[in-house]
Image (cartoon, rainbow, N blue to C red; front, side, top):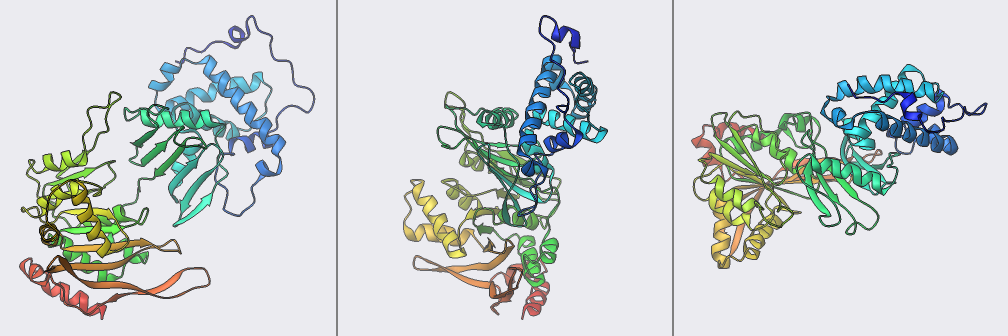
Length: 478
């Protein structure tokens, strides 16, 4: 199937490798070190045989590279690319066995299977990153050149033992990632946003912009569907707060989710979107698609960067304008970043109630300021009064989420827009997270405290028949 070349034809005209000297045959222990050198070691734990036996590790890595080169020499690469991963692994398994016999390398069946998987990862996968992508406990992967790869687990960063061979190896994997979405990465285009087949979001920045080698940042696509009920169990929100947020989403409030990088904004947006009625038409707009809406009537739109000639770019603003012509019941904007803010505000003000979006900000008040600044920087000539009025009429609620120093993401503020006075937008907090201490294991202790203020959207909740449920939830919050 591969169009393999026989071992005789491979060595024809070339000196056959000399038999290894006594004691030079690689043991299964050494090869096991090689195949598992891309696995994550526990933070602060034993680095394993690879660290205790650096000479063996170097030798085994070199042998793996030689076997990979031998495999590539004997197969039809174009045929391999067309095969499924399972078929390729089966075919390579037989070929690896042949090569190990020729090289007089003794391996057990498990070690051979692991070596074959590493080779498949190198050929059609993402090389050393594959084990990290398969690890469900890992939420973020950060590659800082070939020798330094960090991951995030449970909100904390850890340095792993995973490494690439060299800078060229990192660039090769980066090019494989972007080629799957029809993009390129090189010195002329050193900055790319892309998406893995499973939906994980990737940012790649290459030399000369990245001084220490190509940098790859992967925000993994969550396989488990996060709901507000799940967030209650993991202490991200309180039960009372979750009920109020469910009612707010069901009542078609325009909600802005604010927070820093990696704070869980998109996860919270996904969770709140589950309250949208299945009969509504939803249009989502994102730079890199990562929303996981469960409704049947969803149209997903994604921006497009300029091509090599610098043309063909489709911006967030272009898509927001087009979405208004698609008869949406709700528009969900993955993140407000720039001049599309004005179009989103206009959409919210012209009958598209129930729209959701996220924004980078450190508090609810700062989110409003950033929103106004984005409109101003877009070159729109609005007076401060007109701009503040536009924002106050468009946004109903701001939910602030934060990744705190113990690694837990918590909703720290739920605020309502209640009106405008002069040029100042008036707000009231319904909930705040009040920190009260810290446990020995570093976990923060606190309370999701209800402020005691009656919700401004109580009349809207009554229109949807949810006012009693809202008041009952707030009663539990006292």
